[in-house]
Length: 414
Ligand code: FES
Ligand SMILES: [Fe+2]
Image (cartoon, rainbow, N blue to C red; front, side, top):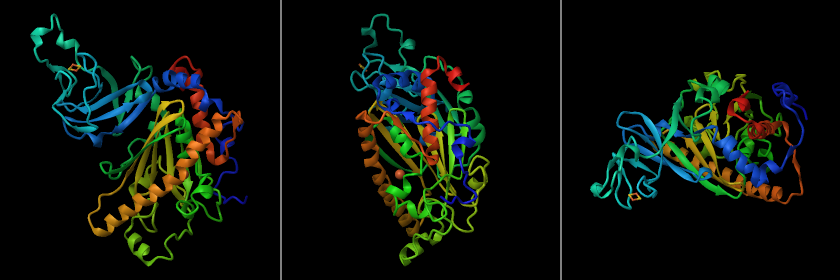
């Protein structure tokens, strides 16, 4: 292949990674999944949402964590602090909050009406005199460790975190801190359950190698072209357990050349995948961690925070993917695409177009995610092979293997 000069001839080697095939059992072995629960997910800081979801005191959302057989209430208390609790009643352990989100001064268990304030303290017990020796102070909702970094809420499911959030994020935080996220309170949310291991789902959104093959009409016109037919990345960076790559944009792409309506629709600055338009200035592109080589043919970045979420970013929007394991072969996926709020009809139409376009793209992905797991389960192929463009998948898998083998989180981060 004739590489454009800007593309690395061997990205994998340039960042010091090996190029060997990787074992398929990492995706299929139930014992590996048990190890990942304890050594990857329990030790890691897990991103559960942005603070814009709970701006006011009493705002809360419930986060299902099937891998830990629990759900958490993530709430902003009256004192302004963000807290997280197991969503389980101290009376006889019923689930307390059944709404997905809302605003509450009290979380009231519907079974016998024990009530908790939004700092998690037990505030009300009907017929309290009927409990002999009940210590209400010890019967609050069970707290979970929570920290906020740059507007992202993280929880840690260890009894006590082995490493601080700052240590955990390490060089990724150094690279990404201070990004001004546009429209952080206005996401389109897509959600679905897959019959596939969480890593298979995560990997789908981590490589552009498949664009030419399964997205020729949706993403292909922008992300592939004569100069880069297989969507090779512009650059990649490994940040401790985390990783990032920058994708190329076809500078000659004219996806709407044939449609007068589409030209009108997109002439006001909102492009099909949020990519930059000519002459457009946006402060995101100035940030040191975004398009770090400042390549003029840049389309977007994939930032994969270990273990299970992506923050992807283009010149005028950002979006996230979360990959929540349910079992070794089931995953809950949730994507949030943050768009500007429509203030006129044309912007409303742009938003609708974006939603249908991105949904079409996702549908092209979905069948392959499940059929890949099915193929892996057959045992016919003990190894998988990663292309240069799949460098994030390789690093993700290597890190899972490293954390699975490490006695401590500190060892895993070393
Ligand atoms: S189980 Fe919650 S009030 Fe009884
Ligand atoms: Fe895809």
